Image (tube, rainbow, N blue to C red; front, side, top):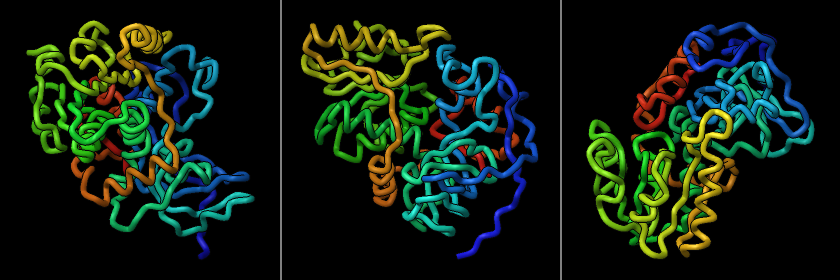
Length: 332
């Protein structure tokens, strides 16, 4: 299949870090189209995910991350990681993909018409999987899947508590835990209770009115909010319950939640309750599992908002402020 690739494309370009991203990312510029190198594919982006990782890199927080991603300004001027689209070009050594293949996964600079991705960072997108749903999966969906299956080892019949259940990772966690037959209690605001119930939560704790241990003890606790003392989280665990802390925004702009994750692991070794933090990385195995879960009807309703590229900053600001229920995506 022959595909004509333009030499120029539209993309969101960021020239400096900032906490208020709406004015920084509101302009869509005309830039040169990147060329795929060895082991890479060039993808025409049909949709791009709005995720916490992109927010961190756009704001330059935690500050230590700037050593790797640019001290004064982002080293990669076009933000965005998650994507769904169609392969239009392949680099040297790529045999798994060819132009015309529909894919989803992670790339670089996905807030654009075209973006590069490593050939082993994408998987096939079935015809029945809409681009918007596919683009929302890689970061948030992979984090939830790995937290539940690789770290918490969730099983049928487990009582699972998801703190921060109405966000992107939380929405996937509720749906995926319910899919294996777990009994899910969701912690979120009362205004978002209907959303998590539709995804499979059997009970909801209003985070403004009750503490997270209000429903007794659970076999698995996923803490996605990053601001509860370990003592409170332990009260919500059975004596051998498993706690997984995902990310965290509570330790200041230098380190964010990393110290809390380390402290949890140390306490867990003493108490006998496995407690750990985690950082996720999408893989083809995880993405394939998410595609299968969507095909089985387990992930319907996670995506609730769609934005044009020019509203990328606004969407990221809303994400950080907790104004997005579920997931938002950009449509170039």
